[in-house]
Amino acid sequence: MVLSATLAAAAGGQKTDKDAKDSDKRPQVRLKAQPVIAMAPARVVLTAELVGGANDFEEFYCPSVEWEWGDGTQSESSSDCAPYEPGKSEIKRRYTVEHVFRAGAYRVMFHLKRRDKSVGAASVNIQVRPGLRDGDNIR
Image (cartoon, rainbow, N blue to C red; front, top):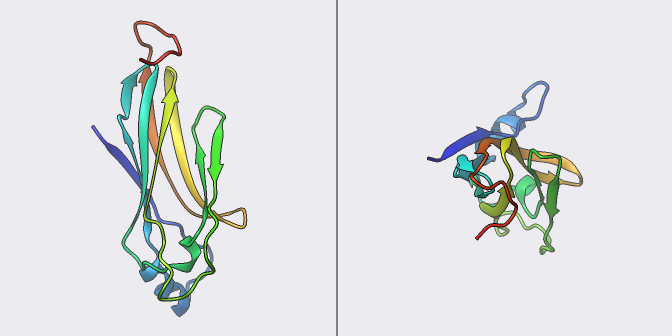
């Protein structure tokens, strides 16, 4: 079973013609977890995808990526990229990670960030039930 959540990053306030053009170019951020229901300890694969929009959408070019695991911990990574060139630079469209969860309910958040500001985000809920053995060792 795969559960996905979609949340398009949107700027608040009044919309202008530029905002309308940007929203046509802005990819949607989708986050999927496999599995979404599991027994502890659960190894879950999470995949964030940027769907639609322009391949050279500047706000999503070379972002830092933050995962909030829903258990009070988080991970962040960034890349060293060439300077952005309109029409030439391409955004990365898929981010995949694996995380191990203990028993509990979790809301995992994925953020694309530019200069410590979230420019795109999505979340997914994961349910992990207690296993026969509640140890931390996965075999």
